[in-house]
Length: 349
Image 1 (cartoon, rainbow, N blue to C red):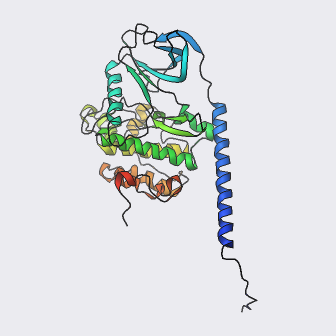
Image 2 (cartoon, one colour):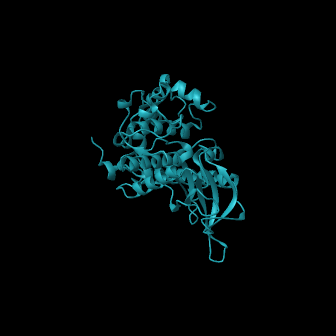
Image 3 (tube, rainbow, N blue to C red):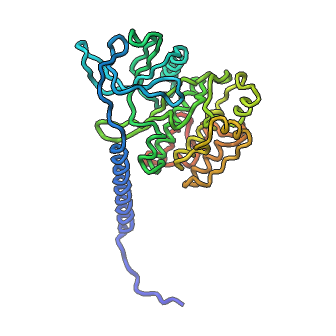
């Protein structure tokens, strides 16, 4: 049926050269697209607010722009600069979180300190200073001074096409997992893992961006009771307790955060949360019978991970060690080594 022709002799390296050239071209195109996305995000981001004549911390910081309410409405967020002895602004712009709930502010600062002293540090925003007394300018208030991010992840996604993809998606997923692992390492449950609690930070030297966790106000020790909750991030078992009036006695477990992580991954990979446009009250009512469907997630491997994290039965949710070894994280940082091998040990066969 087939007639063989004269055999051809090819250099042994020809195929590998073609493959390497194609791979390099693909990586170059991917990097160009990534830079285009980041450039579009920078263009659409708000400019740094203008410096005002208002100060904080008895003149220690000079405020810029207007204070805006935080996502949960319990504090104010404002840009600021460190003040020189002559009263002029100096250094990079910072963010100051200001609140009259001194107990909650002290708890958040203590939680940052606690995780900073742990074996795993996570990837949290840099803290500059905590002022239990915000100064004569704001009597009775506390202030937490931090590194300033470009945007939170929820606000950032519409500027890069509506959702995160490729390396940005993977980097954000790894950052959230590292933050969760660091908190659990010091026996804290985050209790509020969501897209608003991660910010985008740009390296001024290289222009590269990374993600950082913020807002540890709601973190509580494992087995303790929650002080508050976000309906979009809470699991069905907590919503059920809330609806039956037993929320204050609910015992926090690490799998609470695993559910939140699944919701977080779904939102950053699709650009939409399961409950977008639904009121907090309605979300809480829906959660006890909620059945998450993940067919909208473009990557089937990631969809599998999300589905496992969103197991309705708490004990069926994977541990962080199992999550870290999920195939979705294979090849992170351009090699076959799992980024969490240092924390959990190598893969089992």
